[in-house]
Length: 281
Image 1 (cartoon, rainbow, N blue to C red):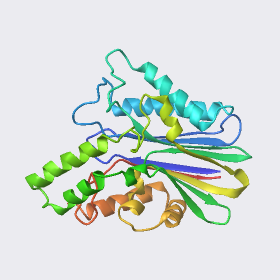
Image 2 (cartoon, rainbow, N blue to C red):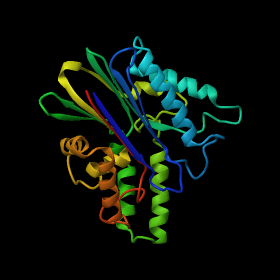
Image 3 (cartoon, rainbow, N blue to C red):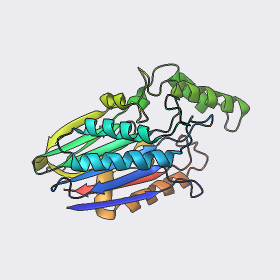
Image 4 (cartoon, helix red, strand yellow):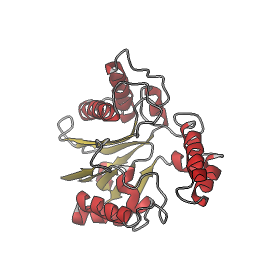
């Protein structure tokens, strides 16, 4: 078994809000991988005295412990308990009902000699390569299919002159429309303080004998495919295997730096926290 990981903040002056950890062995056999991407704090505040790194460290740590040790619990059940446990660690000064309370995307995958289980919530990515070399991307792509007026507002932002007051106002309107759909019916879902969100996760199980490798990526690392279109998912997995996760992140940074104004490849941030984990089973 080979497991490699790498992570890099999008801005060295800000904390890295990604989290990655591995439990090996898990319950005496197999392994478990957990990857979280903390949601950038809202400029209007989160209603919480804790920061996003606090949330991802506790939520990620709890999920790793549970998924690694509690084989009688499904990954959905592990995530629900991890969310509940983390919520209890907040103090009286934290309003957990606040729509911008600290939250994160989640990828969890674990395996034993019989099965490979997975869970994906929001826009981080899990790749599963089978023993024939085919690679399948497990995606929770709700964020890419938000209803109107989000698509029209996004198009309006991109059509306006960069650095113009009109574009700035349109970006605010677009952001508000997106945020109104966070953890709401018809929108998209992230792990915050409500355990019931686990019902929205994309979950599945694959026979262990059919899986050669898995890879977990925050959206900052997945940009090479999803934003810059420099390769597809099988090619990205091949890059991870040949050159390692750090090489992937370096290629993402090169692509980001080549488009500093974000005009050729529109994205919310010039650079984003990027984390990748490769596990060859």
